[in-house]
Length: 158
Picture 1 (cartoon, helix red, strand yellow):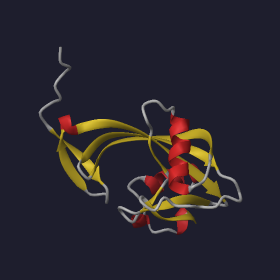
Picture 2 (cartoon, rainbow, N blue to C red):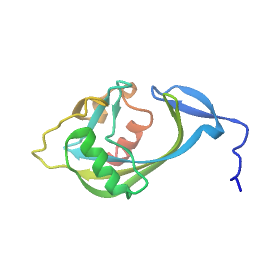
Picture 3 (cartoon, rainbow, N blue to C red):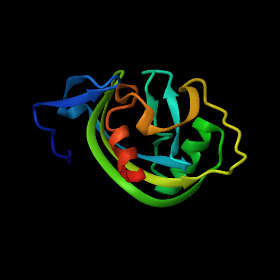
């Protein structure tokens, strides 16, 4: 017996550059993801996306066999070269997201993470063009992935 058929409708979604598109409801797949917010002296460790050129919070998709903290540790290391210690969950966000030909019902979990003081940053060049400690209050809002600046300000208490 086949499962329920998705509704015959278009679902609006954000794009990689913060624009909008619409995709058929049946094209969407769930994508749980975990992101790590490392704070040091009012600055946050961010990666500049090689795809969009925007500052992103390190992290990404969690595999079906991983718990959120496990997936976060793997993704954070892959993107930054740094082994982090996952602390408390600080935010959750949900949206429809379209990247390239993929359509996702995105479930994003944000955690505080701790990184060693002497950590050497090694960006994953296929996805991250730069890694840096950024002060969100001194940055240009248009330089951030959609929603990230508001999350960072909330976590930092600004």
